[in-house]
Image (cartoon, rainbow, N blue to C red; front, top):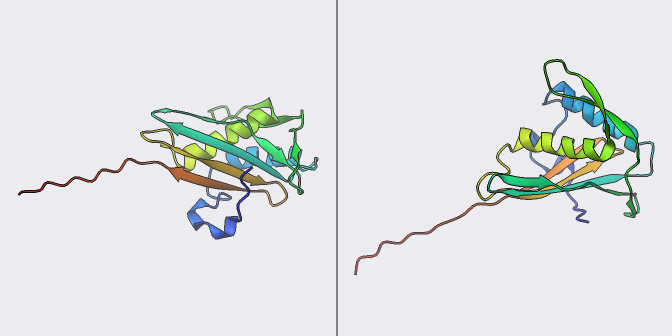
Length: 149
């Protein structure tokens, strides 16, 4: 588990999530938080890794305030799909968390799977209702020297 001392207040303002994005994303986040707040889960961590147009979001890991691992509840979440009908479906909370992670990654860093890719972790503070994206982008660097001698 990678519990860092970063907080939503210590990162760049354009990475603060609430209020900047589509209403359905906020609605889905709140639906997840409503389910999680009924448990003793304090933090959810979701790591991701991608490159060369492939990548994945790994299964979420949940922890109590004392950093004890907990399983996610078996509850379903009402998820609002982003389509013309804006329909809702019931999905397991684990799937909803993975979908939420994909949605924020696409929104904030749509190219996270391109080229050398990126990796990182999303931390959700259940009580605060906030998410923090720790994003590490990979890149290839070259240094060329043309010397006459």
